[in-house]
View 1 (spheres, rainbow, N blue to C red):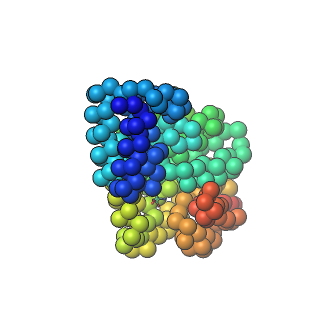
View 2 (cartoon, rainbow, N blue to C red; view 1 turned 30 degrees about the vertical axis):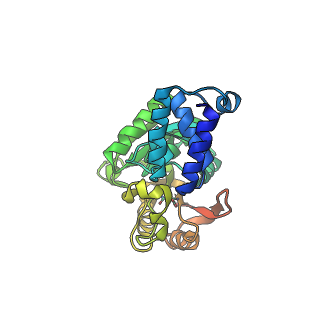
View 3 (cartoon, rainbow, N blue to C red; view 1 turned 90 degrees about the horizontal axis):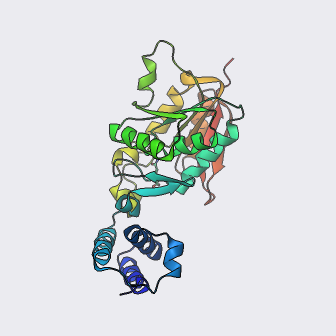
Length: 284
Ligand code: GLN
């Protein structure tokens, strides 16, 4: 059986079972099994597939048909051009979040500085920023030790050395230190989905850690906590930047203004949704 035939069959199966991107899923899973990239697949689609490869591919397609995210099946997801290892202990990095990386880069106006990423997961935001600003020092924290381990492995694999990862429940790792560090930029993609949001019953999110997705009945609990607690960890004229759901921008803007932040604004993602809101601490 050729690669093309196998792909067509898998695409049909994944279409029936409700994947939004059946052809892409099938191609990515097949490339993973045969150890080639998609360009190779387009050129050599008439080649035969070995029996063991067929069996391995069939198992992956079956798991995908049950809804398992492709990123967990192949253990890797690209974000900001970086191949990041993923695991069910962390949220799968999403293109929407590149809006937050862009915002941080746009406000990293000094040659060097420090950035803190709260709830770093795979380390996606911290690593993307660190790769673009080698003279900045980046700290990524997560409450889950598994996430910290994974983020460290990603930094090592990508050879990004101006970043460190540690365990912290939001700011808990920093409060007990005598000389509390101050950060020029604090970013976070916290949980922001409401507990009863029907979106949680669809697609990849069903397999992702609840603790990385859900924040109270309105989805605002962690966003509001971060707005209320971040300021004491920010440098003079430091920036707090938060990703949120597209209906939460005005709520986050109001909270930032009320907490005394200046230059508060929201930025849109590629789909045109208000996705990130930021404010400047402007302390005297
Ligand atoms: N943007 C993600 C989603 O809607 C949620 C990410 C988050 O809660 N931080 O699936």
